[in-house]
Image 1 (cartoon, rainbow, N blue to C red):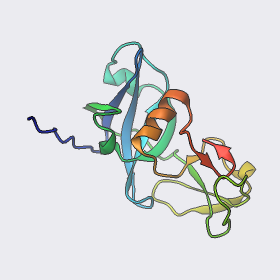
Image 2: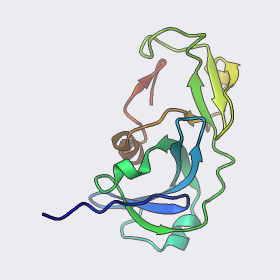
Image 3: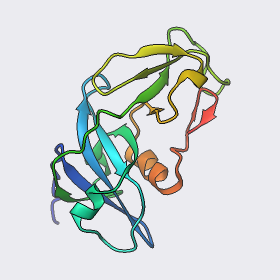
Image 4: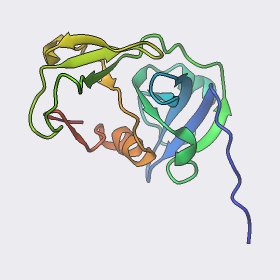
Length: 165
């Protein structure tokens, strides 16, 4: 019986997500101490028909940022393929509903109590969803299966305060 090799995950590590006919990539760019010390990843735009050189991947634009636990997805959903200087994550912005002001269930319709924040910063109340920047991603910690789904089909597969994300 062989032991499962433990994969260490650090800022700058690059990961490959394999599908039947293509590859996609993401980088572990930061740790968010204000979101349960979760990993923040940047998923790169585009898919590839074959494995890519790391410099080509890093030259791509960012598709989205999100929170997860990277180590939990190895090897079932992705594999580590290299390390590089972490890309700049200062443009990452996250949104969520203020649970103290909105006690409805997430499936009960749209909320009027949205807030936004950046990595390591406190939430800032903005009110209605139309005040939330369009590039803001949900500020929740997603399991590897939800991340895999978001990378493949563009949605996490979850209902959150009136929207399907």
